[in-house]
Amino acid sequence: MATRIINAVTVGRLVIVLVVLVVWQWAGSQSAQLSFFFGTPLLIIGEFVKLLVREDLHTHLLVTAGEAVTGLAIGTLLGAVAGLALWYSKVAAEIARPFVLGLGTMPVIAFAPVMIVWFGIGFEMKVALAALATVFPTFAQTYRGAVLVSRDYVEVLIGMNASRHQIFTKVIVPGSLDWVFSSMRLNIGLGLLGAFMGEFISAERGLGFLVLKAASLYNVPRVFAAATGIIILAIAFDWCGNKIEQHSDLVIQMLSVPIRIWKKKLRSCLQRWLSKTGLADK
Amino acid sequence: MHAVGPLDLTVQEGDLLAIVGPSGCGKSTLLRALARTLDFTSGEVHQSGKVHLKENRLREGMAFVTQTPRLLPWRTLLQNACLGAEIKGKLEQGDLDRVRSSLARFRLTGFEDSLPGELSGGMAQRVALVRAIDSEPSLLFCDEPFSAVDFVSRFELNREFKKMCRGGITTVFVTHNIEEAIFLGDEILVLSGRPGRVVQRYEAKDLSILPNRHDPVECRKSAEFLRLFDDIWEDLKRGHSNY
Image 1 (cartoon, each protein chain N blue to C red):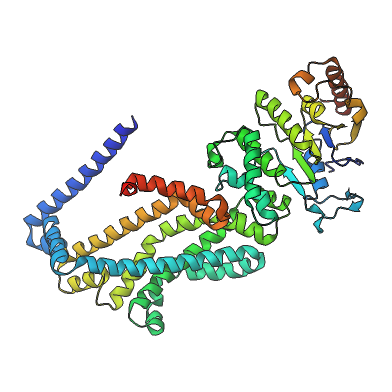
Image 2 (cartoon, helix red, strand yellow):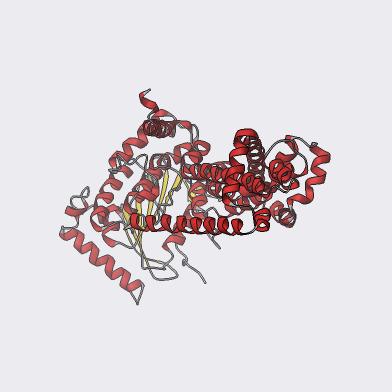
């Protein structure tokens, strides 16, 4: 029954994609104007192949991915550390709240000019924009997670006469990490946007650079082809985020439990993974 | 409004004091006040002759088992059971071995790497017990720890619990189950309805007449057990008109 539903969903999705592509192709072939403004699926595929063969699409893809991942990692780390640190002081949290909300809602592009002043026009500027786009949402989410960790768990440790620091490392940090992971997944789009914005401002490589260059030459199909690269990146990042979330228990244990009681589990996990990939036999 | 009326109670070192009373009579409040995890309006708690203050370190060597297991959901069963040892200091191989053998005693072998979400309620509660007892407390507070466990498992847990506490852990055990109180208690305190006051106190000599004190099933078949059950039942009725 469940398989039948999944099949129906897959077929439904494919039908929608096919209908859109066929209508798009047909409309483009009917009018040169439409084809100029919107391209056609076949033209886009052609441009995509050209980008792959002649323009080293994979290099541009890796550049943007590098900027976005580095920015996302820095933003998530800083946001999570700051959000968790605020758990220690309710007063500090109250003082910081309006500033965090204010800064969090500010569009990241507004900071772009000052980022150029601070970091130049290279890799660092794009990383800074991606980090800036992700740090405040992560900060807010992590603090929320830390506050929402069940009082029941804290009481268990109080009953054991645990210090405040032990409560923080054994309950608050691991209890909020799920929030950090989920905010990281939500922030993938923001990280990519930051990197992309940076490339729009000034770049010689990267998907943003490809899109900008193609648009300045009125080559709409190439714009779409380069934008496909962004979609590929977003899907790949989301897949990685999903994998991390699936194994979040292990990550949390590695961070909050003495190595003596998780190394065996890590070993069994790795063995299972190796046997699945077939690497264990080699 | 007062949850607990004025009362005075003593627990002998190494003994298990069972407290029975109707729902809402302040049993849990009393327990938390004794453990000093809750502030009370007036009164004092003394431990080994010293005043037990919330702020000082006398709480060391205390463990608490509640109605719900409160296992940390991101930790495996073994990691949850080791928490007490971890809080005390560095976790040694000896601690791990001890916890493993306690888990085996509570028939939890094979589930060491399971997460709490994968366990039944009864299993999770057993882990909570191992966690409390293996932190080697000198004072153990139990707030109806077996109330969510099925009828048969309850007997087995009572038997194991009694064996584990025989090592001299001073225990205050709150329950609404009279049979459990008779089987486990070295002394029994019967409380009235809200605000809870002491209606009756059964001391070690009243309970020493019971036969088969190591086996909850056999013990409850005896005439002495039934007589005691009736007495406590009457006390409860006396203390709470609606009971």
